[in-house]
Length: 166
Ligand SMILES: CC(C)(COP(=O)(O)OP(=O)(O)OC[C@H]1O[C@@H](n2cnc3c(N)ncnc32)[C@H](O)[C@@H]1OP(=O)(O)O)[C@@H](O)C(=O)NCCC(=O)NCCS
Image 1 (cartoon, rainbow, N blue to C red):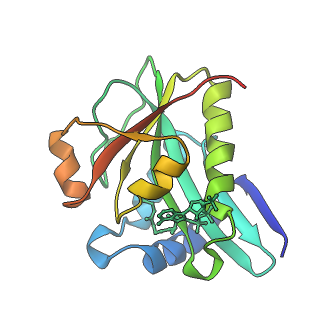
Image 2: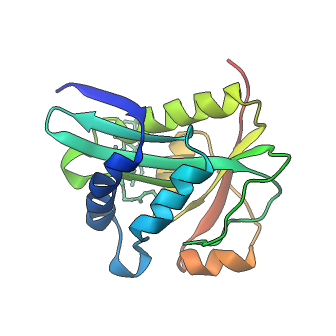
């Protein structure tokens, strides 16, 4: 089956909400307005994957600074003046399309963007047991415990990977 990845736009948000609903517990669902804010914040660093039947996955990311974490469902997120990191906020693939490399392709696309922006590292919060998935893509677990980490769930863990030009 064909698969393509392109920049995500506001017209994709219905599909994003549907995929999110299929992938996360109800307590974690972010509102449409939150996704729209993330798009407005950094319009060039969010992607959607589509196959012949429609949207199958999405990835929201944005530049970031320091070791802290953005709060989940942050209402007033702003970009740092001096970004050195690429924060990988939310990666989700619809259950019907898993195991086909959709997530790996979305991550490759995003990290290439981070490298092109000159960002030195990528960081994320792994949840729902996804630590193993991220390890496979070269990320390592960090000991840091940001106060905001608790909101991501009991098994949430900060992970990081250096970004270097190919
Ligand atoms: C985690 C998730 C994004 C993976 O999507 P996917 O498209 O099925 O992943 P891919 O097919 O690209 O898999 C890439 C590699 O990771 C491995 N992998 C996939 N899911 C994995 C998991 N949960 N644990 C360990 N490894 C995993 C695959 O086996 C593959 O390895 P390979 O290249 O050696 O074959 C998807 O399961 C998902 O949306 N889960 C719910 C939301 C979530 O947990 N998001 C991440 C939060 S941090």
